[in-house]
Image (tube, rainbow, N blue to C red; front, side):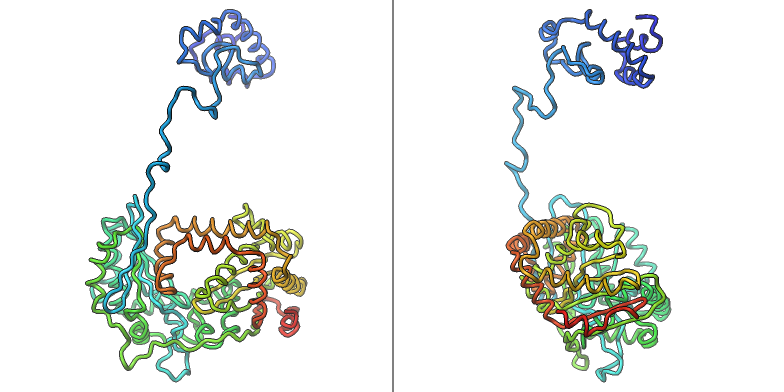
Length: 550
């Protein structure tokens, strides 16, 4: 045993780490055979298994004894030492306590809402064990409330929501922009603003200790903006650059085009400020007028996740109790009426791919809850993605548009179902992209997919169940984020007047049937068609040819 080189020296010292044996195995087949011989010899000199049980019954392990353990497993031998159960087998005689969830569970967090005398609503949900707080101010105001040029109802405010998003957290009557930034840095805060067609939101996150400071900064930003000329001009240049950049993004262009072509009135107005139409008219006076018209008490919700409701109320109420419950008599805050009519929009652009979208109205929007939930599941059911998508079911690779289109037609670059749902209306459609020579086929395929889901028997129970499970899991995972919970509280209160329990959503989704999916799909495609195309649009089929197929 002493003449075997490195292998025999490792065997000679039984106290050494098992890693020496594994290293020895890497030196080749010849030395592995030497190791087999040495191990066989050592077995004859080892202590009998019964003696091991008697001497140390509590210290048996895969590493003890020369006839068992990892080395024998590596060599393919059957262990002759003491029996050690697998890790998946419970140890005999060991009494484990019951799992924590069986004898103590934290109560589900409840959303508390308080309405002030002027109509401002303050809502919160205190998440147990959270050390941070996210607070948001949500305003029932967006591009639908803007006044287009030539409307005869006051100054043009088209693009104001987009610019207000950029002007958030700038100088106020109480602090300069520099001071605001330094205060946020001092508390480790993170803030952002977002404008949409129906709502405007300002959110901030910090540790719980600094929740009062964060609330005060948010309210100061919303109530007391100065709109200094130098800050305004700086942000106008940024908005102009963003608009130019968006004009070369087909996804953004198509979505804007579907609204402008499909709606007459409020929802037909652009969300993004257009350099050629609105940027030259926007100034501090226009923004002050827009805020005065729309940022009134009944249209504001303060929402928080991870905050004690009484503490939030004690901070926010003194800062908001004097807010006007309505706009001044000389001001009007009623948005223009909006009606879905359908239509066609095309833009010729030098691009290797042509983008086409077919969309229809979702009547009733979020306030038609059953249909809205069915549309959400229908979108997941159709799914889709890009030709280079990677991932599992959550990425859409088991959806109908992926298995039936993207996996079948190599010419298709992307094929995705989408929806944009609002309080009273919405859009549902398919956005696809391919080379100009395949664009006619692209429209034909999209048409067939719409008709298929609207036909009973075309969707299987397994597809529907997968879509329902995916929808529910996506919602539950998103609600693990404080930011999402805060947004969910604020937007639901603006839409419904209260926050619905997530279990109600889950029950509604689980109750959907194949007939419900066919009914909502049929209901959607019976509304007027809206088409938008971008790229080489010469070979895109005519609007009337496509519309007559539905």
